Length: 226
Image 1: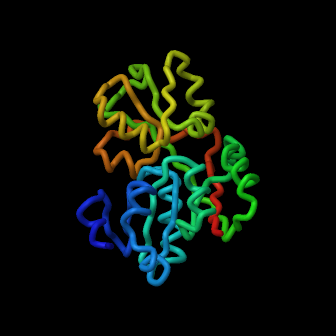
Image 2: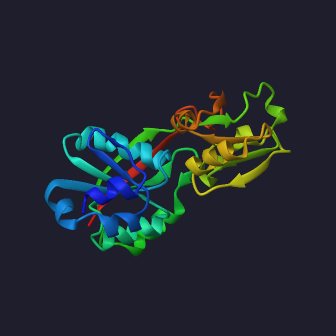
């Protein structure tokens, strides 16, 4: 059963981490006996490259480096909470609060709804936003559309307000925003996200300083379990 992952799904294996692109693939193709006996599954808001994904890697590095990990990308916070509640996934890592934009409202609502879940651990990671473009833009004023998740738009509102002609395009995640930039290949488009994902798509990082409203932009994450 475990071999099906190798042939059917996009993932990479590094330091005992297997990344699976969605919850459905995980449910249908990973033997649950293998999960319980020799591995740990962790759900995060995907796709790979989101800040939630980077937080998950940070947590694994510090606590589960010697175990086989199934990192399972979920499409929504609701999907994450459902998978924990039904014992499909062992752990979930979700953002709860950012020191620039405040509480993540949807996650807080789901915590009230799924009140039987336990907070196993909590930690913070620095959020280092970059302005990313397909072209190596020298004049930011050439940009007319900016892509990102709604939270970075809040966290970078002071910077964005300096460019009132920019059209904001809200995406499912920062990774999704960066992927769109790589597909559109327009010199007039840019995304706000992290440099790791920008490098993954071979995009240009055109600004790294003074994007966030606070220099020490950080997000608190919770590790949830049943």
